[in-house]
Amino acid sequence: MRSKRRKQTGSPRLEEKRSALEAKAAEKGVQIHYDLLEAAGLKLKGGICWVNGGYHIFVDRRKPLTEQIDFIEDHLNRPLPEGPAAVGEAVPEAQDETA
Image (tube, rainbow, N blue to C red; front, side):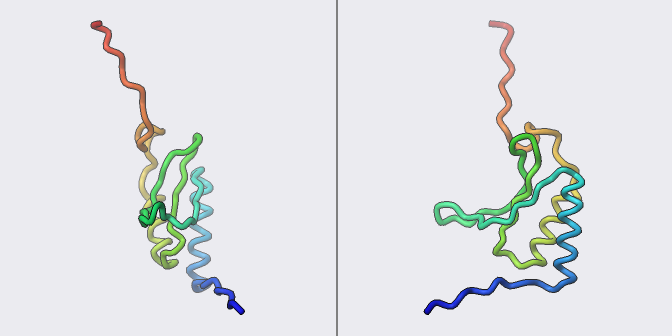
């Protein structure tokens, strides 16, 4: 019989801090996602990006709670980039008017 893997929980103080950061992000209009950031065997870093008209922070859920908190704090304390062009979305090139 397989045993169920128990979800590790952090201290209540750290959980409260993370909840406060999630509320701060919501006030700024930023959504936070906790995912396994892995693709094709590569472990990816989290970050902030512009998706469907809003900012999203992606956090690796395998990280310890303290690292998740530091990561979220770091991204929320920075000024948000100015729209999609600043985050890396493709911007149409200017047309050359000399042609």
